[in-house]
Image (cartoon, rainbow, N blue to C red):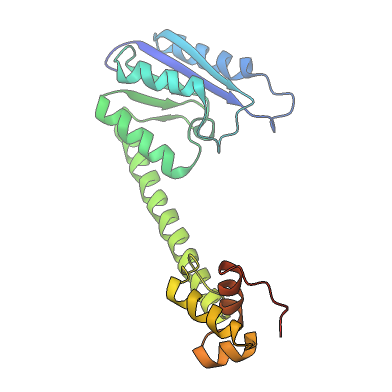
Length: 204
């Protein structure tokens, strides 16, 4: 590391029953001392899920990094730091652009050395793979829904002219079924049109 000011970060969530964040910080302090790094600040998010965007202490740590108050970040474990693979890669890219070094204690990953940078690139590859899988699952789910006749997306707005037409046809005594057949629309659409037009008629 080019300098010796580091910020420590740990996190325990509500699912980490009985876990004391001090256990994480103790390891990080010892590691920093062994490498003769000065601890600028310690940040711990308690009771915050890794999947949540709101992690105030992580936000303060990143603010220290952006204002160059620290030269590096030392975390206990990658999954304590990033809420997802995508967010982890995004954050690591930001830190790299800022010139802030990053070390994960448990995985023994030091992104300031060639082996660590190679691992960061590998994490980026996995993140892109994850995004591709999600996109593919979404596309497959949409197609499956369409194959089953399920409408996908927002329901279309009912044209005002259609409302007037339906009202006129209802005033003439036509049934929902008759209007549906006459206009070439599904009965569900005609029902919605009658409700939108304020026509309350029993289904026929």
